[in-house]
Image (cartoon, rainbow, N blue to C red; front, side, top):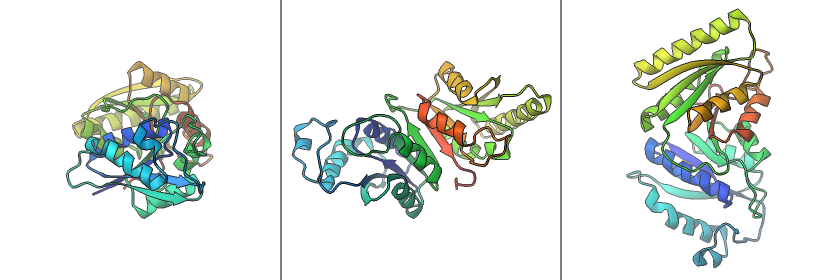
Length: 280
C-alpha cells in the first residue's frame, strides 16, 4: 500500500494540512505517516492546542500519541497504517530523505502561518521541500479547509514536461470523481506558440475524456501565468492546482523556479507540485 507523508510542526496551519492528508489517504487508500523535524531538545506544548490533555504532555512522542488518538477515527483505510516519525536536522532535507526511504506517493504540508513553536515548515521551507522532494508535494495555504476535491486546474505550457502531471491528476480526479479543467496558458501573441498550446490542450482533454474524467478546456493569455492560473481557479471554485516544477532556465519553460515559487507561496488554493519523472 502506498504511503502519504504529512509534514507537521503542530502549528494550526500544519494541522490543517494534516487534515487534508487524511482526506487524500482515505480516497487513495494509502498509509499515512506524520513527520516532525525537531531542532529543539526541550518540548513545549504548542499554543494551538488548548485541550487539557495536550497541556500535560512532556515530549513530542506523547504529543503525537494524543494527535493520533484525536484523529484516528477520521482515517478510514481498512488495513492502513496511521503513524508518525520524529526526525532531527534540516526540515527540507529530512522530509526529502524520509520520502525517499518510504517511497512515498506524495507529501502534504502547510505553507503559511506562525505558531511560535518551531522554525516550522512554512515560508521558504515549503518551497525548499518542493524543490528537494523525490515525489509530488501538495502545499496547503492557511485557511483552506479540508474537503473533497471537486475541481482540479491543470495548466499547460508548451514544454513536454508540462504534460507529465496528467497521470497523477487523472488518478486524483477518478478517486474523487472530480472535474479537470485543462488550462492552456501563454504570455506571447506568437501564433506558433498558441497553436502548440491549443494542440496540447486538446490532446490532454481527449485523453482525460477517454479515461472517464469529466474534463473541460480553456486557454488564457496574460502577463503572468501564475496570476492567470490562480484567477481562473478562483473563478471555477477549484480545490487544487497541479503544476510541474522543472527548474531549467529554458525561456520556453514558463513553470521554472520563479513561477512555481510564486504559485506555492501565493496561491490561496492548494498546489500539487510535480518534478519531471518523479511520479511512479
